[in-house]
Amino acid sequence: MKFCLNCSTENPDDVMVCTECGVGLSKAPSGDDALRLREDMEEVAERERSLILTTGFAIEGRAITRHIGIVFAEIATHIGLKAAGEVDAGDLRIGKRSSHLEKKLEETRAACLEKLRQRALEAEADAVIGIEFDYWNMGPKQLVVAANGTAVKLSAPRLTTTLPGASGPPFSEGT
Image 1 (cartoon, helix red, strand yellow):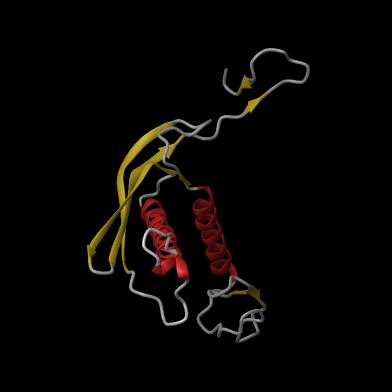
Image 2 (image 1 turned 60 degrees about the vertical axis):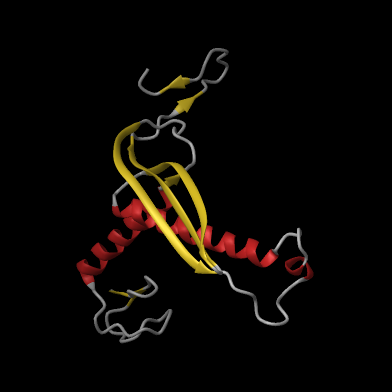
Protein backbone atom coordinates (compact mmCIF):
# COMPACT_ATOMS: atom_id res chain seq x y z
CA MET A 1 0.00 0.00 0.00
CA LYS A 2 1.11 3.56 -0.75
CA PHE A 3 0.32 6.24 1.79
CA CYS A 4 -0.78 9.65 0.45
CA LEU A 5 1.13 12.47 2.16
CA ASN A 6 -1.64 14.94 1.28
CA CYS A 7 -4.82 13.27 2.58
CA SER A 8 -3.51 10.19 4.48
CA THR A 9 -5.38 7.72 2.25
CA GLU A 10 -3.93 4.24 1.74
CA ASN A 11 -3.69 3.42 -1.96
CA PRO A 12 -2.81 0.21 -3.85
CA ASP A 13 0.89 -0.06 -4.75
CA ASP A 14 0.15 -0.02 -8.49
CA VAL A 15 -1.55 3.42 -8.65
CA MET A 16 0.37 6.61 -9.48
CA VAL A 17 -2.12 9.16 -8.08
CA CYS A 18 -4.13 9.09 -4.87
CA THR A 19 -7.58 7.61 -5.37
CA GLU A 20 -9.01 10.13 -2.88
CA CYS A 21 -7.40 13.50 -3.65
CA GLY A 22 -5.57 12.97 -6.99
CA VAL A 23 -2.11 13.96 -5.72
CA GLY A 24 0.80 12.15 -7.35
CA LEU A 25 2.20 9.22 -5.36
CA SER A 26 5.66 8.95 -6.93
CA LYS A 27 7.39 9.81 -3.64
CA ALA A 28 4.77 8.31 -1.36
CA PRO A 29 6.06 5.76 1.15
CA SER A 30 4.83 2.21 0.79
CA GLY A 31 4.87 -0.99 2.81
CA ASP A 32 6.42 -0.77 6.28
CA ASP A 33 7.49 2.85 5.69
CA ALA A 34 3.87 3.82 4.99
CA LEU A 35 2.67 2.05 8.13
CA ARG A 36 5.30 3.79 10.28
CA LEU A 37 4.41 7.16 8.76
CA ARG A 38 0.71 6.60 9.38
CA GLU A 39 1.39 5.63 13.01
CA ASP A 40 3.56 8.73 13.47
CA MET A 41 0.87 10.95 11.98
CA GLU A 42 -1.80 9.38 14.18
CA GLU A 43 0.40 9.89 17.25
CA VAL A 44 0.89 13.58 16.38
CA ALA A 45 -2.84 14.01 15.78
CA GLU A 46 -3.62 12.42 19.16
CA ARG A 47 -1.12 14.72 20.90
CA GLU A 48 -2.75 17.71 19.21
CA ARG A 49 -6.23 16.57 20.31
CA SER A 50 -5.17 15.87 23.88
CA LEU A 51 -3.19 19.08 24.52
CA ILE A 52 -4.98 21.05 27.24
CA LEU A 53 -5.08 24.85 27.12
CA THR A 54 -6.42 26.64 30.20
CA THR A 55 -6.38 29.96 32.00
CA GLY A 56 -6.40 27.99 35.26
CA PHE A 57 -3.42 26.61 37.14
CA ALA A 58 -4.63 23.08 37.87
CA ILE A 59 -6.18 20.33 35.79
CA GLU A 60 -8.77 18.13 37.46
CA GLY A 61 -7.66 14.53 37.79
CA ARG A 62 -4.09 15.28 36.66
CA ALA A 63 -0.96 16.35 38.50
CA ILE A 64 1.72 18.59 37.06
CA THR A 65 4.89 16.51 36.96
CA ARG A 66 7.21 19.05 35.32
CA HIS A 67 7.20 22.70 34.33
CA ILE A 68 8.76 22.94 30.87
CA GLY A 69 8.75 26.73 30.59
CA ILE A 70 6.84 29.73 29.38
CA VAL A 71 5.48 29.64 25.84
CA PHE A 72 4.60 32.79 23.91
CA ALA A 73 2.71 33.64 20.74
CA GLU A 74 2.17 37.00 19.08
CA ILE A 75 0.09 37.96 16.08
CA ALA A 76 0.22 41.42 14.48
CA THR A 77 -2.57 42.37 12.14
CA HIS A 78 -3.92 45.30 10.17
CA ILE A 79 -7.38 46.49 11.26
CA GLY A 80 -8.11 48.98 8.50
CA LEU A 81 -11.53 49.85 7.16
CA LYS A 82 -13.51 47.22 5.34
CA ALA A 83 -14.18 47.42 1.64
CA ALA A 84 -17.05 49.60 0.48
CA GLY A 85 -20.38 47.94 1.13
CA GLU A 86 -19.04 45.86 4.06
CA VAL A 87 -19.37 48.53 6.74
CA ASP A 88 -22.48 48.20 8.87
CA ALA A 89 -24.14 51.08 10.72
CA GLY A 90 -22.71 49.97 14.08
CA ASP A 91 -19.19 50.42 12.71
CA LEU A 92 -19.82 54.10 11.96
CA ARG A 93 -21.59 55.39 15.09
CA ILE A 94 -19.55 56.76 17.97
CA GLY A 95 -20.05 54.70 21.14
CA LYS A 96 -21.49 51.71 19.29
CA ARG A 97 -20.02 48.24 18.88
CA SER A 98 -17.89 47.61 15.82
CA SER A 99 -18.68 44.22 14.31
CA HIS A 100 -15.65 44.52 12.01
CA LEU A 101 -13.24 45.11 14.90
CA GLU A 102 -14.87 42.41 17.04
CA LYS A 103 -14.53 39.88 14.22
CA LYS A 104 -10.90 40.87 13.63
CA LEU A 105 -10.16 40.46 17.37
CA GLU A 106 -11.79 37.02 17.43
CA GLU A 107 -9.85 35.86 14.37
CA THR A 108 -6.55 37.23 15.69
CA ARG A 109 -7.06 35.73 19.16
CA ALA A 110 -7.86 32.32 17.61
CA ALA A 111 -4.71 32.51 15.42
CA CYS A 112 -2.64 33.48 18.45
CA LEU A 113 -4.04 30.57 20.48
CA GLU A 114 -3.26 28.17 17.61
CA LYS A 115 0.31 29.50 17.47
CA LEU A 116 0.59 28.98 21.27
CA ARG A 117 -0.70 25.41 20.80
CA GLN A 118 1.97 24.71 18.16
CA ARG A 119 4.73 26.08 20.41
CA ALA A 120 3.50 23.86 23.27
CA LEU A 121 3.50 20.80 20.98
CA GLU A 122 7.06 21.63 19.87
CA ALA A 123 8.04 21.71 23.56
CA GLU A 124 6.34 18.30 24.00
CA ALA A 125 3.97 19.70 26.61
CA ASP A 126 0.78 17.99 27.75
CA ALA A 127 -0.85 21.29 28.70
CA VAL A 128 -0.43 25.05 28.86
CA ILE A 129 -1.69 26.54 32.10
CA GLY A 130 -2.23 30.14 33.23
CA ILE A 131 -2.84 31.43 29.71
CA GLU A 132 -3.11 35.22 29.50
CA PHE A 133 -3.90 37.44 26.53
CA ASP A 134 -2.66 40.98 25.94
CA TYR A 135 -3.81 43.39 23.26
CA TRP A 136 -2.18 46.59 22.14
CA ASN A 137 -2.14 49.09 19.34
CA MET A 138 1.18 49.41 17.53
CA GLY A 139 0.19 52.46 15.53
CA PRO A 140 -2.55 53.46 13.17
CA LYS A 141 -4.63 50.43 12.29
CA GLN A 142 -2.09 47.92 13.71
CA LEU A 143 -3.24 45.49 16.40
CA VAL A 144 -1.07 43.00 18.28
CA VAL A 145 -2.51 40.10 20.24
CA ALA A 146 -0.11 38.18 22.45
CA ALA A 147 -0.67 35.08 24.58
CA ASN A 148 1.56 33.37 27.09
CA GLY A 149 1.29 30.49 29.50
CA THR A 150 3.34 27.81 31.20
CA ALA A 151 3.95 24.58 29.28
CA VAL A 152 3.77 21.55 31.59
CA LYS A 153 3.92 17.77 31.60
CA LEU A 154 1.06 15.97 33.36
CA SER A 155 0.58 12.67 35.14
CA ALA A 156 -1.70 10.10 33.56
CA PRO A 157 -5.40 10.75 34.19
CA ARG A 158 -6.57 9.48 37.56
CA LEU A 159 -9.65 7.30 37.25
CA THR A 160 -12.36 8.11 39.77
CA THR A 161 -15.34 5.82 40.11
CA THR A 162 -18.30 5.68 42.44
CA LEU A 163 -19.04 2.08 43.34
CA PRO A 164 -22.65 0.95 42.80
CA GLY A 165 -24.69 1.32 45.99
CA ALA A 166 -21.86 3.16 47.78
CA SER A 167 -22.74 6.15 49.92
CA GLY A 168 -19.21 7.36 50.67
CA PRO A 169 -16.74 9.37 48.60
CA PRO A 170 -15.71 8.14 45.15
CA PHE A 171 -13.03 5.47 44.89
CA SER A 172 -9.78 6.76 43.34
CA GLU A 173 -7.39 4.44 41.60
CA GLY A 174 -4.25 3.98 43.67
CA THR A 175 -5.86 4.65 47.08
